[in-house]
Image 1 (cartoon, one colour):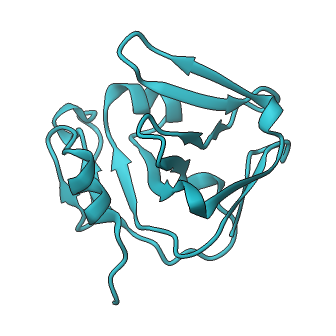
Image 2 (image 1 turned 45 degrees about the horizontal axis):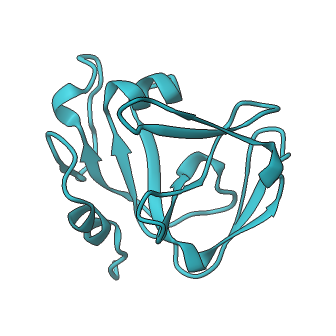
Length: 143
């Protein structure tokens, strides 16, 4: 599976099964995405490979550790290696082709926008669950 930023300056490949997605409804993700939430997944670093454009990535990090990596040309949010150094954070909107992953979790729903209506069956967490709980929720099961 291939992922690309808007201008296609940055491209990456995912090998193996793509986990399910989560949506984060915190105020930082709303500002980053310009919408009600940010949709993403966590991927084992052995499944991830940069194909081109890694040198075009800029990073922004808040004093609390919230991080956003983005393309210097088009501004698209792009994957980054997480603090645990074992996983990549991958924004779902960059992935190309038909995906059969679904949203299984919603985080920070306690601070979601008042106009945000969650319309699926994903588990809703008031805040951020521990990373192992979220990783388990993102694992694919047969449907």
